[in-house]
Every structure is written in C-alpha cells, then in structure tokens.
Length: 127
Image 1 (cartoon, one colour):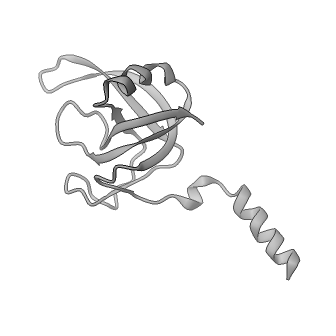
Image 2 (image 1 turned 180 degrees about the vertical axis):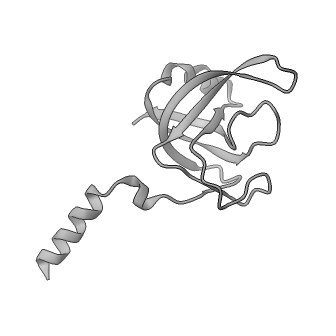
C-alpha cells in the first residue's frame, strides 16, 4: 500500500501540466496562468498596424462564462494588456520568457484584440 501511494504521488508530481488543465473563468479577477510571452504586430479593423502582447499557455485552454467564446473551444494564444499603468510598463521586459500572469480574462470582442481570450493583467512574474 505504501509503495502504491508513493508511486501515485511521484506520478502526480512528474505529470505534465496538461493533465491538470481547466478552463479559465470569465471575469474572475484572480485568474493565474503560465505561458511564454511574445510581442507581435497585427492589423486593426482599419488595416492599421498595432502592437500586442500574446501569451502562449503551456497547454491550450478555454474560457467559460463569456458569450464571445464557445466554452469547448481550446485556444493556444491569449492577448494580454494591463489597464494598470505600472504593470503595463513592465510587460515588455518579459517578452520571450516563461511567466505567470494574473488578471481578469474575457472573450475578445473588438478588432483590437488579437487572440480569442484576453486578460487584463494585474501582475506578471517569471516562472
């Protein structure tokens, strides 16, 4: 019995994070997700270029509770920004790195969002 318990605990600790993937919940302000941050140039509705920060989660994720996005849709990119000026100033320094992002997710609803899920970031740190 002890061997079985020890083996189970070891497997859980070594299991890939995808085994624990769950949907993000729309408008939940304390949402935390890990991924690699990148920056890209995209076109808005008027074909004007604009910069955006994109988080690529370690495993595709979904969003529950938002009419803009079907809960069963798995997405592999999340547009992040911050309405907090101090946090917004720090985001660029994390480009290319594996980070934890905390904030409020919602479904993209304008041409200025460049991924199906958007998070208004309240905190970001290196993994």
